[in-house]
Length: 208
Image (cartoon, rainbow, N blue to C red; front, side, top):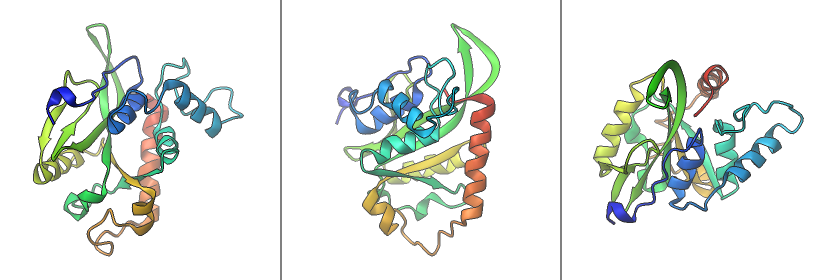
């Protein structure tokens, strides 16, 4: 598959979560802003100010919205413990990766001293893994499995980044996204602490 055939949605306003989902499914029609806004309302129907998106309605969707969106298509989102080696993953059973990273905030060509968050999709297409970041001019080739593992290790060296795996519900139930389930000791308390940390980042800086 050539880069011309790869669907790569570019950044518009603060809709990187929408772009990440559509890039993951390789279709502009996979999800819409209307659908993600509806999920926000379902998650917090009684809140006048919805905590899962931008107050201005420009996007800024959080991980809860992404998880619900994927569940509606038969997929689950697995948080990956950065202290673990990515080599423990059974890559053939992982549909894609969603990376949450810090991002500079810009108005026109001016970069403001604000730290925000950004969602990025990484997935395999015809034997090669690609970085489908909506802020890139075009898809960035990562390479094959070993290249991907090196890429993930480098990304996970940063405490400011969070990695989520996208798997089918069947794979989630069987835990076959792991090569060795026993070797990957995912303590629920530690997992909740990491998700809370991400939530704190969201509430302070919002997602773009």
